[in-house]
Image (cartoon, rainbow, N blue to C red):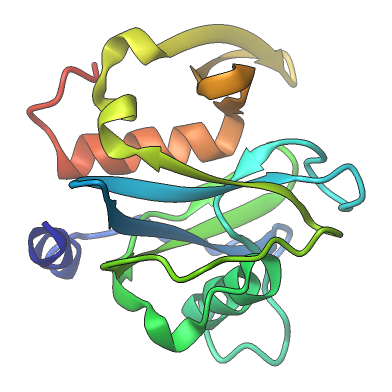
Length: 190
C-alpha cells in the first residue's frame, strides 16, 4: 500500500498556498500497519497547549526558523509530541496545503512506518495517542457533516466520532477526508 501512495504523491500536482499573513505549520499523516490493517496516528491535545485545546490532530505544529523544510517541522513535532524517532519514518510525499480559519496554512507530510515503536506522550502537549484504522474513515456511517458559519459564510464541517466519544473534526478531518478521497477514489466517501 505504501508504494501506491508514494507513486500517487510523486505524480500529484499538490495545492500550494503562499500567504505570508498565515502561520506556517507542518503535520504528519503517519500510516502504519496494526493487526493486519492500515492505521493513522493522531494525538488528542491537552488543555495546556496554545492552540486547539483538547482537539484531535495529526502530530505537528508551527514551523521553527531552524527547520530546513516543512517535512522537518512535521518530523520534529512528532518526535517532541509522542517520541517518534524522525529517522524511523519513510516520507512518502507531501499533500495539499490547507488554510484554516484560525490563521494557519497546514502542510501535511505523509509518512509510513511498518510498525510503531513504543510511543510516549509529552504530557504538556498530548493527552492521548490514538491509532485509528483507515477503514473507519472510509465507512460513510462514521462521518457526519455539520453546516457551520464562519465570517458570514456557511461551511461544511466534517466530524468522525471515534471510540469513547472522541471527535475528529475541523481541519484535521477536512485534510484527512481529502487525502483519503484522493488515495481511495473508489471509497464510499462522497
